[in-house]
Image 1: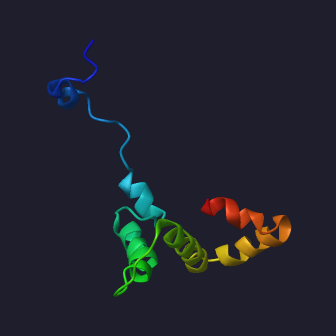
Image 2: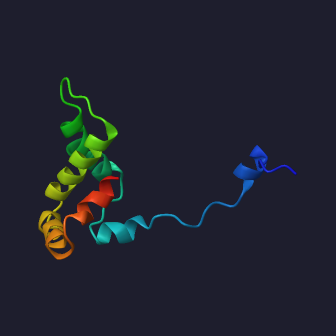
Image 3: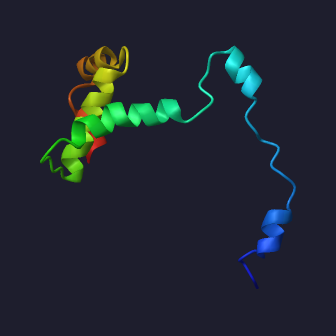
Length: 97
């Protein structure tokens, strides 16, 4: 049984019908390119973790980026602390394990 499809079969398939409706997205002022995501990565991750001489272990980077994402996202910092007040500090711990 050959589970790897023939290259010809892959490229000769009908085109995918699930394509982005650019006009509808533009009308709603939604981003249609990858620029927004790339800018967020640069702002959120690169500026914080890639400073001169910085070295990070995975755990430390995850914690710092989680806090940075909360701070940079409108309303999320307060939402986070509301959850801590409601459920206790353990809601923070399980995300970092």
